Length: 246
Length: 333
Image (cartoon, rainbow over all chains, first blue to last red; front, top):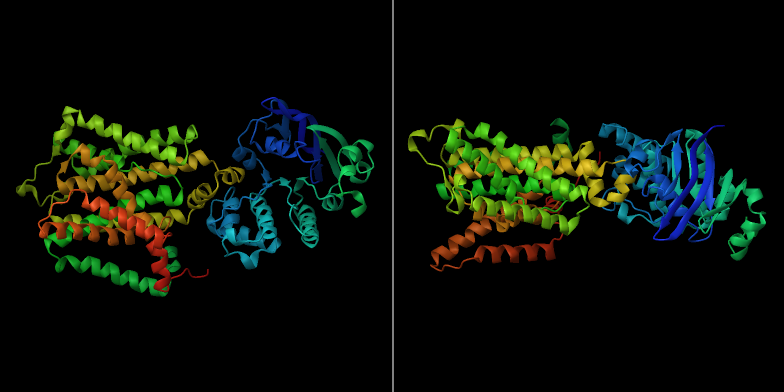
């Protein structure tokens, strides 16, 4: 399998604070790949560096074999990487459907065609019945689903999900897990997710990267990762998020 | 056009057709004074629509739109004054100059991340220093103003925008209608959705692949160019231009009142706003004149109070409320 995303020795610091330190990993095309780690480990910074919010200080990021680090977020999205935000950012005054249409208009010129694509995605994410509501009026689980629908509307080959399970109840987590797995299987879109909810990570990810204090401390299959002593010590062992629950 | 028409509910179509018919026929019964008020209504509906594109749709606050109207008017008037070039041609030059200023302001603001209130200050600054420049340029008449000769012999030359109130009535009506149709078209197009996305959340818009800089620049260019056309109309209607009026911040505020009161980001907001505000303002002037009191600034105070009342009572503007009242809420497609 060839990798679709290659992160090579990426470092990002903010005024002396080393947020991401020499992180290297690759994501295979079509895979579901998770990045985990305690709060402040640098996960979101890593994401923002891939999505073009920041340029890395050193290192390089390639997507489909072409270097993308330093490009602005809109260019990165246009090349096929869509992202969701940890703190959801729907367009509040727009309807649910119009939110998704905005995403679909990246590659579609015609609003009618974009509307059709939006509706198909809204059905896929169980939001079709709420398509005429203002996005501001949605519940948190629905907003999270809207973020996924809107990102998918840009027809990405790589989907970056930043804590899309956070704040969801267990039944909602299972629903989201099923939806994401189905979308991954049906469309072949590669998924890179940051996640705290181990239940979701174990159910979805084929490979896991563990960050701690900006450094990659382990990488591998989820079952192996949770037994890694370094991981247990830095992250899993210290909280009740633990593996017993899985 | 067809899809726009079919998007209007049946009752709305009837009201719209009746309103258009009444406006087309109205000059038969209106006197000169009332016609002059309608010209102003159409003018403010038109330039309000242009400003609304930029603020109501793309979310960029301009408090210096008098600049574009003034430039359009001055450029067309100067071409006529010095070279006898008619305003139908001059309007192109006016639009080009105004859009160039719009492009410079937009580039400075959007390229260097000057946002919100600071962007608004930038637009005020450009209008102000243009006013000062025009105050001191001899060939534009300076502070003393530029006067277009009204020659009764040529008053039939509609092709040179020389004519009586009726010409300006129908021209103003056509412009206001055209602006509403253009806005409706743009709002339903790709760029319209992208404007709304930028207005709502720029970071999210960027993450969806929208070139935010480009999208905002398009809004400024269309808005400034459109406003300049209105400026040409009003310059040839009044036949005089003074920098202290044309570029004044007060004029800029007057331009934004109709869409704010009518409803930001709506097609009919600027029209409804202009129909409410202009007659009220003119009525107030008529009242103070007939009472023999001369209260300078009464209109500004009155506009301020109206604005406060509307923002308190109908924060979304009058039109969304009126629309519900008339039973014209959007049809499900």
